[in-house]
Image (cartoon, rainbow, N blue to C red; front, side, top):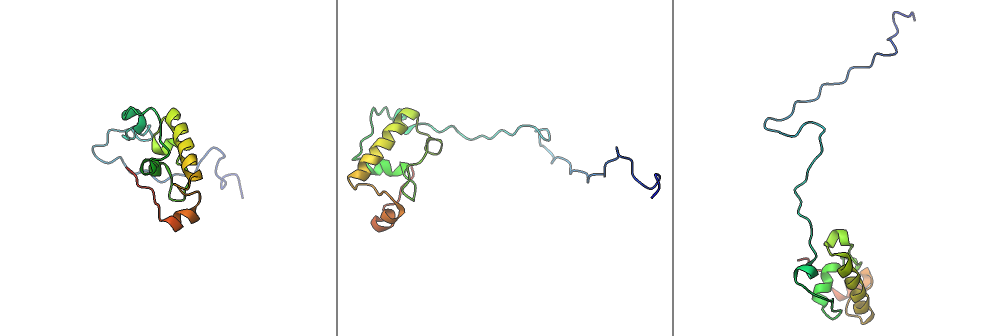
Length: 116
């Protein structure tokens, strides 16, 4: 190969052209995306509840996954103060056999969480 046949080191292979933006799109290509998702609010703060009752199994089921795990704050939208109270109440309800510990207990008792 001679030096004429080899491509120069600074040359790059050509990329295929990008398709143009669709008509009516105001967002510049590659700019930040803004999602219009609403911020989750704590249900306990909205209802002005001071505590969480471990005997209120219907309310506590909303904070337990289908596998029997306590849902995290980022998923339920509960504030830190009430998330701690929910976790304690769920653990107390489990100890008294009001709520299931594991997936096996969930299947045996047919208790599935109901989301609100």
